[in-house]
Length: 91
Image (cartoon, rainbow, N blue to C red; front, top):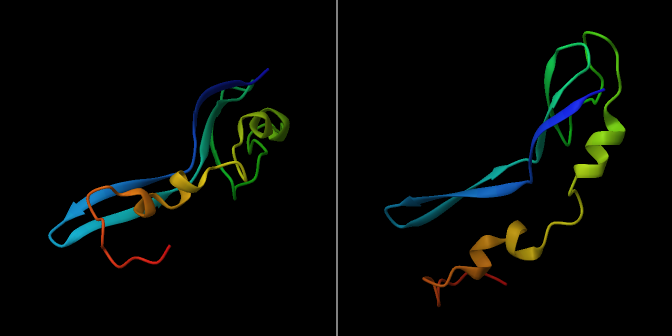
């Protein structure tokens, strides 16, 4: 039986720079301890099969996946930046 150690939804890391902010996308990932003892890190684009024992973790990862359910504020945080009222960014 596998154990889900950690699940992180996709999000943007925001970095302050001299003339504004830089947004870097961090994809969704799930860390799983496989029954064979292998620790695996899965992203939305990676295979869900353990390389050591061949166990498929798709069902348990799919339960945690937020793909397609992220809100607009998570996907486009620059649209909600309160410190940039007339930044000229398209909405």
